[in-house]
Length: 574
Image (cartoon, rainbow, N blue to C red):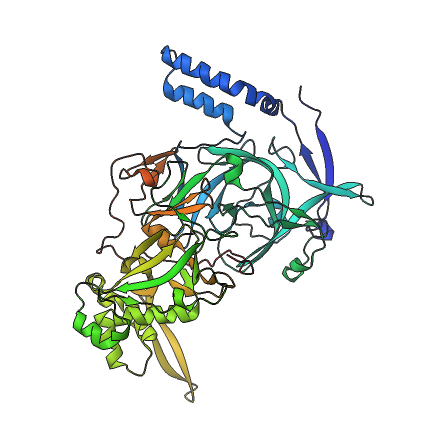
């Protein structure tokens, strides 16, 4: 029998006092939950019975699998080698995945983020209190809107005779949020789990970025450091008050991956269509052990700039001979193992982060890289000779701004970048990226500036719209300051990496590991991989390729809107 319905009331001080009212929050124990007590006992019997029924021809294999999955759904299972997937919607600056919460399900488009490990969804209470935009979809599980929803109570208020709710304050690179701890069923693609005290409902935020935000699907490495609990009744009166909340306990975040039994997953993006988030699949042939404990991270040994075959080795040698290797490549001076300080474990670190738009590193590293690219690119060299008063990293950016004059043929002249990665297990892998991967194209209107005199006396510059569109290009790089004692300065490898590679994450190895496959990304339809080339290490199932990912003739991808910055707490070590 189901236990009786229990109701309690919690005052929500995030709603202005003039509109404050008691919200009825209900927790229901459903009869279906009783099956979890006997699931362990009947699962072997169910599996044997299904095999027998299939062998007798009374049930198809697909139907038997569906029955077994239905039995396991919500109980948290290890999907192992059973590869399934979910589509990643291309938002240009980032990708989102459809997340279903509650019973019946409510859907939100959340950022699939490998830089965090919590499930955070926009609560309708956040919009009602004016802390979140009304244009975003939100989740509301109270008042019976979700039969499987419950809030986590953290005490009792003697004055109001109501339960207090537990909440946490989470720090990201773009700001902080406050979230109330709750429980409900969460589903991504074909994978679902009951997140007991593992669903965080955002009720206030101080995030410093524009655009829609409905939540985060955290796919980061499991954190060992707990979050600090705060009393939700205190609320956050303003963004500056977030750091001053009274702490009364700790909260260990519960990741979706572990709860759902997902031990491996991978992500990849497509230029002109949705990307793919894969769950499960076989072990990759080459795995690089993560050197990070707070983040998925690798030992980063710098970048090789490889001139195109159309570039003259003689010309390159005369312009930058000190950096030339035997193969006429230019090697960066940053992230060199010889420069490590005593006690330092790696010269640099690199974090593959699907939630960041650009490839980001220390400003000095970015300036040197731009200069190296200019030295390895004849067109940029010629421009640098004409403008000798300008530093080469600025000349490189000026040449890119005029990319409409030389695209697409000019891509053949540009160098290829090679990122040198090393795992904790000593294995090495070079990740190559062509110019159409490390530059971005922006379409904007041509404008004219005219000088006129106001009242015939004061000069005034006026902007005249032409209605004609033009293309400009920019590097897919940005500067970020993130320095650690043990791993040196950190790079954040954002979306360009996921356009070039299927980035795999494996929790079965010790330490957890990453892998990179240059197989076509493919597509996901109804939980199945479609139109991808066969490659066991990339978790693929079909045999047709949707096209080469690094074709030299592919135009740089277009970008609209401001880039997303890393959602990483830079106060943490790697």
